[in-house]
Image 1 (cartoon, rainbow over the protein chains, first blue to last red):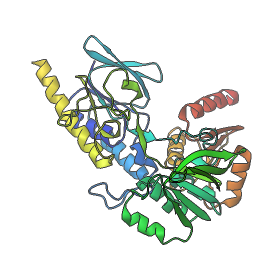
Image 2: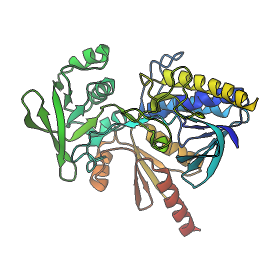
Image 3: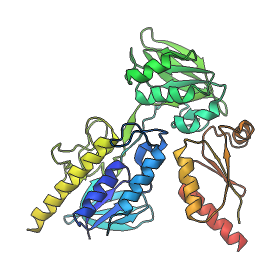
Image 4: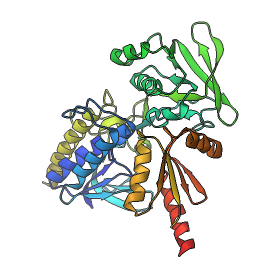
Length: 306
Length: 83
């Protein structure tokens, strides 16, 4: 029986693991990868203490920091379920193993939000792209659409400018929500068009993508745009499936946490980072929130042990 | 040993994860950077209908994305056939 099982290997999971090891708690970290969602970023420039680092290098550093802790156990598998039995928690993994613990820290992060329109699933990897840094070079000389006016959408446009022949940024509201610094840079490129107040309704094609349909929200008129690539960047969804029947979730599916401690609605389960309902999805916030949660778990176990 | 070829781009984290996996497990592989090799990019799309990396060829099998379980399965099968 572990004191603590941490699920996830992003900045939250690793920060939690480092602190748990220093508190000499008997801890198991279950994760199938390190680095979290920033893994695919070519340059992270707001990880405090580091001017610029690639997502890959950050992942390596996080993994190295965790492995340097004495007595921490790491299992490179995917957690597939959590059950509560007689005051303890049991985590199942993809190889049908099961591990018991007194407490759980859930750091499972988030994943790409999908458009949920006809054609999206059919053409995933066939013109529908969720990783612009990975796949932008494959769209050399092609016309593409980027869906989403937040930072991720703007960064996808930046990734595409050196390759695509024309980029149409489709924004649902009347203005972009991403950083003005990035948008100023985009506006300098003659390749980029922005369509505001538009809702993407369908992705069309045969074997590969050939275009999209979108509705102009002001006129309700449906229009078509011929493109060979559709870069979907409309935010993230919390990876909370494994606890959805155990703890309270908000309307987005994020694990509700008590902001002072990070504890969920179920005593014994904490959450930190993008899977929680904390405001702002950031590496630095995820790390700090996991630290707070682990310190609170340490107090909780000491209280229980008295 | 089974022939492995990875189609990749420089900033693709999943491509690096795949290469890391093969390195750790002692498999050698050929890497093709499709951001500079346009002909290879066209070949990859034509053969696999995939416009995304990584695409990994292991012998005659094709794996789309870094699907560790699928790769392990193919490698185990290939290992049995050669031994």
